[in-house]
Image (cartoon, rainbow, N blue to C red; front, side):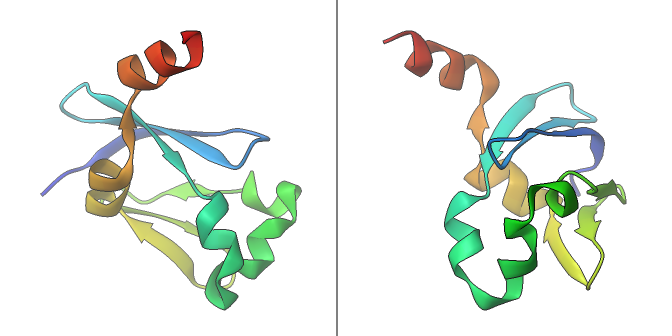
Length: 86
């Protein structure tokens, strides 16, 4: 099982997630904000209040994402930085 070591939310509704393996990935939550289950996170201050629970992250209101989702749907930080330079 993957374990989250560190989570850093940004004001652009992305999450920089560092896993115990040392790999860092960037997860874009903006598409999720269109879903009813995540609509409360449209408030950026609430979004920034994310908590790391090791195998998942969570916000108030029983909103959560698993470490596996963050890993598989996230983009390697190195890849995302390269794309931004293009």
